[in-house]
Image (cartoon, rainbow, N blue to C red; front, side, top):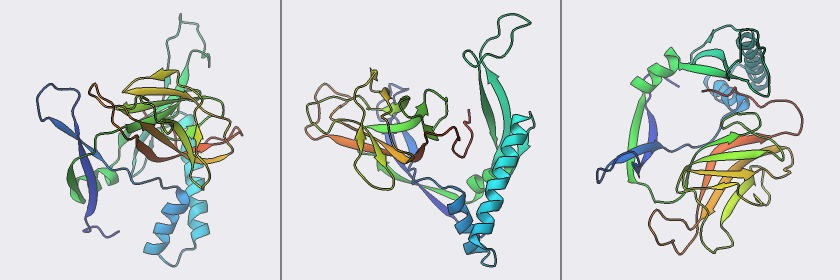
Length: 255
């Protein structure tokens, strides 16, 4: 993409729950999907047509692996997207305590990089489209087993869905949490909810076949005392990887 080209970022306004002031809104960008190395490589080929798609995909995959290994070694990895630095979560009981996977976990801290910062500051034009239709909104999906955010789902594990107006309420048979195959096919409904609140749903992940999935929430819940007549849905546009193998999907968990 040429340096001078502008990027339109669409956003919708939502009522701000953190303030009591009437008419106070917050803007949320419209997330339009997920890109993996294959899609990034395709964009690269469009910019530099002399390179083969398979070559670029291989280079990107190798770079991911090398960067991930460097972060795991305790290196600070810096590229145009940002700086990545490993950290350890959990308290250690005493000066001789050792790392215990049951009590501790590894994550990655992220700081925005120069290239990304420059694009956000100089090329992005935010188009605010007014108040959004009030309904369920998913902000993130966390895999409780791996603690990964917006990347994967563990078969027969637990999904922690955060957002607003999520509570499953009403008599419609459509209401519920669904795992929707990206490749097509019937959505799979969660059997029950361990937590059912407007800001959070905790649902068991069904025994799903390997593949990529979207998470969909359908409900008649309304912030007021009256339920809406027709169930409304929100489908989180980030693709989540389900794999029965031990391989992890692309992308670290970033805090």
